[in-house]
Image 1 (cartoon, rainbow, N blue to C red):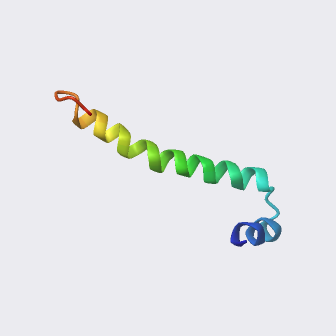
Image 2: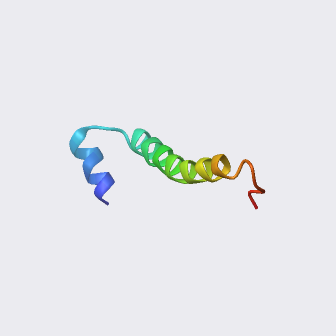
Image 3: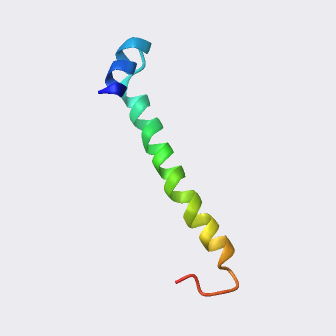
Length: 46
């Protein structure tokens, strides 16, 4: 609801907002796994 209001007020299409949300989720999920794999190189990660 907040994103829809922001989209209508700023004139940004919902596609760009969805892209921003997806990229932020990917970054939030990807960074911890990247650091876990990087820190666990000498050991078995799993």
